[in-house]
Picture 1 (cartoon, helix red, strand yellow):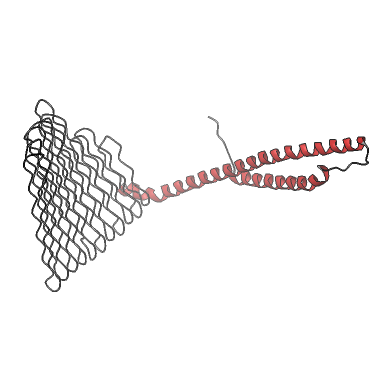
Picture 2 (tube, rainbow, N blue to C red):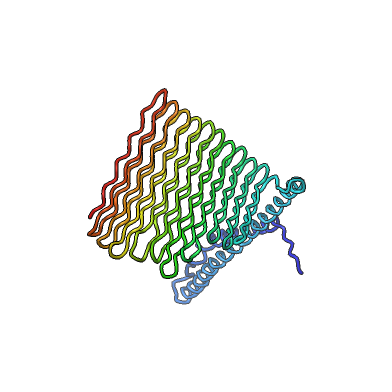
Length: 452
């Protein structure tokens, strides 16, 4: 095996020397151009004119060639300069790695964790957890995706400063991995992994739940929850689609400051031969746990899967509840309910919309979250009955100083398709205001009935 030794300083010096030589030659060429490219004839005779034209032509040809040579020379200088920079960067990176290796060696030997550096990502298809970040500084590694039926790997935790790693995607029918915790001093929690798609069958399998978001430490926001997996496809002659997976809960905010993470959305119901699967419920928003921070919003409910035969479709998923605010902080808004599935064929019934999520309660000081809107009812099949709209979520309650959350609007009913339209859902109840100061929340308006 042959080895290459290079000295970046010598390469850089050579590039500088070549650049100065090229500059000197260009200056000399420019100085000679005026006198050589326009040679005056020694006399008025034809021979003198021909001799002058000959020398002027040679000079012009030389100037053209020297211009091309200067461009080629400049390319050589640029190549040497970039090569010297590349060697210098490689040596600097090598020195940095050696320095970090020396710094991290004691903690790796004692605790199995580096002092400075990011955690390694889990391998795809293994459900392997992400590695922990450095004790002093470093982000956690992302969790690896799961194989069939295997949950996604959890995200690695950060050390003192850093963000938690994201959870891995769940395998078929399995849940997503939880997000890693944020740094003890500063850093956000990692996002939860999405749930895997449900197994196809008769009926289809339930989609995997989304992973929970990681919590923050002293200062930072919680990670968002993962989205639930779609329900499995229903097979056979009359298989129903599987229910969508539940969305993951959002991670808690920092103890000193930070908002809670948003809840993950519920998975969509699976497609069925007879009827589609129910939508998955949205995840709960994370709490603003500390001195200051708002609760995270609840995830939206998943919509119902598509059905293929005469019959009633199933329901949209319920929206997730909003998270509670910190000592000083607002409550999170509730998630919207999922849409009900459409009916198919003659007299097919539309599915009901999902209920809106409850608004999160406020902290000691702060406004409560509003309730989520109810899901829309599904459209009926020919001469069928439309689905009813979902009920709006109730508003959250204030505590000491703050306004109560407004109730969510009811979902509209589904169209009757020349049959009976669905009814609109009722509006949510407004939350109570603060005991010292604050107004109660307004009730949500009811949904409208669907068109005939």
